[in-house]
Length: 262
Ligand SMILES: [Zn+2]
Image (tube, rainbow, N blue to C red; front, side, top):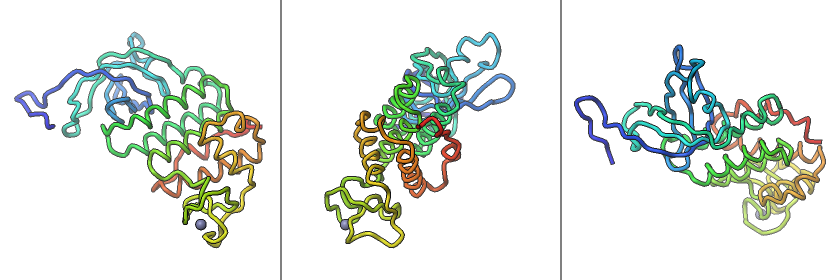
C-alpha cells in the first residue's frame, strides 16, 4: 500500500504499538531520535519532540533498553524518508534503569540492542520472533538471575537463528550427520564431523559446545553451572560466528565486561 500525497504532504496516521528502545540520539536543542524495535512494525526511527526539556512528560520513558507502549504519528506504510513522531508513551518496564550503574549488564544490553538493529537492516519489516527475543533478553538482564554474558550469548545464538545462520551444534555443519562433533569451524558454519573438518578448525572443550547447546535450548541449569574458562571460550566462538556473518564487526561486543562470569 502506498499513502497518497496530499497538498499538505504525506497523509499521516496515528497508530499504536509496543517497542523496545534500542538507541537514543540527540536532535537539535530539545528533541531526540529514538530507534525502536516494535512488535508489529519492525525496526523504525521516530522523532520525540521536546523530550530533553526538564518538564517533558515522557523523556524519561524513552531511555535505552526500556519496554514501552507508544502512539506514533506517520504513515505505517513508511513512505519516503519522513520520520514518524512519538505522540504518547507509557512505560511498560524500564529495564535500563535497573542496570544503569552495572557495567557488565549495561554492556551486554548495548550489544543486544546493537545486534537487534543490525539484524533488521530494513525499516518497518516486522520480525515478531526477534522482538520477543530482544525483549526477553533485556528482561532477563534486569532480573539478574543469570550472568549477563550468558544472557547475551543465549540471545546472540537465538537471534542468529532468526537470521538463518545459527551455528550448527548438534549436527555437522557440512554434511548434516547428527552427533556431538568435536571440531568447530566458523567458515564451515559450526560443529563439523571428522570427515568434513577443514584445516584450521578449532577444537573447543566438549563442555564449551555443551554450553552453546544449553544456551540455544534454554537449559539454564547447565548454563548457570558452567565454569568461567568454558564461558569465555563459548563467547569467543559465538562472537566469531556472529562477526563472520555480519559485514562489519559489532562495536559494542568487545566492550562487554565478562569479569562477573565466574
Ligand atoms: Zn560432516
